[in-house]
Image 1 (tube, rainbow, N blue to C red):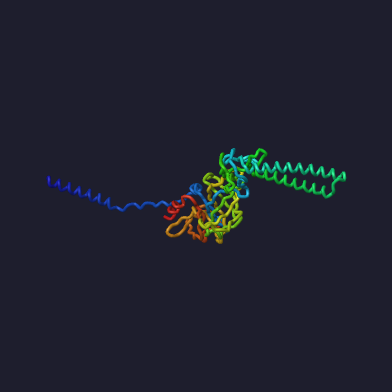
Image 2: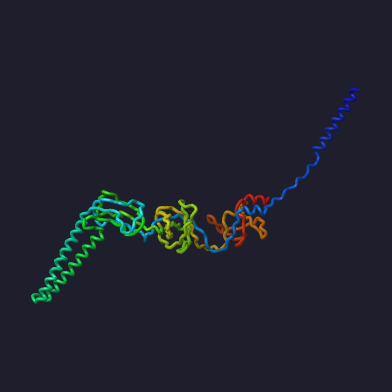
Length: 365
């Protein structure tokens, strides 16, 4: 009886294992593959670029240095030697035309003062001599020749007096014998090479002051040989500086210096920039973007929208209904931030320019 019960239990266990095995070997259900779709609401959150028409222009990037306008700048040299007594201005100060920049005592200036005093005395003597000659001529006691000689002598003495006074005035002198250096223009002191108690020698070849009107400044652009053929006078330029990252300054190339620097191997071009607020200061470094002429006449788009995959270039093109599709393109030329399309896009096409790599992989799969 016990053997029969054990046999039945074994049969029951085998049946349960068979049923479990049958359950384990049953075919699994096939999952439903979800189709990826880009909704209109998602497209509205993305950056969309429009393909620009062909215009035979390209943006070239160069470095440049801000300098003072040479035509609005004055370098001031000492006309005489002497000892500097005072310098009432400092580097960077704004000065007006005729403002005193420095004064000094000078033996040469004392000589100019002496010439003025001497010429003035001789002029007075010539005036008295002419008056006497006129009286003698009127009374018949002298000839017309003697009167004419007195008149000519007065003319000479007048000319000598004017010359002596002009020299004194041009040298910034005064009757006290001091030499005064004055600013010939209004502007800012951008260079200063003089201090009080300094002795100036007649062979000094350095400007004591440089005063510049900074209402207009120059950006001196460094152009490499490979880009010389693309730059023309009149090309529009945008100037960016670290000091003002949110602001662009506009200008045009108004002169190209047709000479290559032997050391830097660059050619300079000049851009005049209005500077009414004096934001731009000589010595600043800047980046210049020039819209230069090119021989390529192809539609252009921002390079951020290009997708490179498996040695080919693609974009996500929005169709007429606003749905994106993968579009293969061929590139004719590339710059730092622009791509010229030779095949695959036309002017006016719209492409996705943000999160495009993720969307591309989703659509491709």
